[in-house]
Length: 73
Image 1 (tube, rainbow, N blue to C red):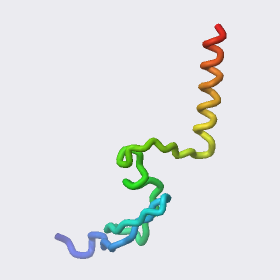
Image 2 (cartoon, rainbow, N blue to C red):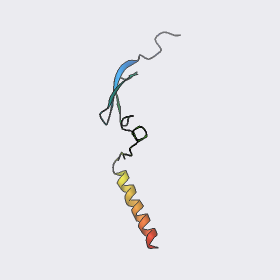
Image 3 (cartoon, rainbow, N blue to C red):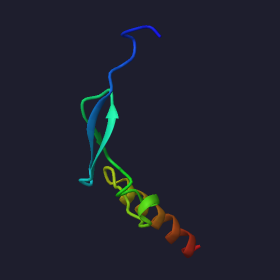
Image 4 (spheres, helix red, strand yellow):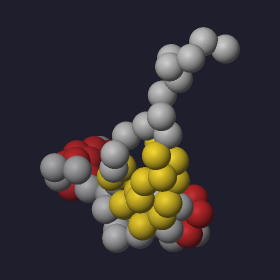
């Protein structure tokens, strides 16, 4: 192998938006994630919506209008 071409891996602490912290190895100095195995619905079995800028509310309003017009006809 050629010397000095591979990145140096550091032991870093990854921090999730839910507050969970875990150790891993990476070439970066720190890692911040939005969803981890402690808060992801697939692993927890709980459905929790992650609302980004009101997209869920906008979808629900649009769906209500469509559903209301379908029942009136």
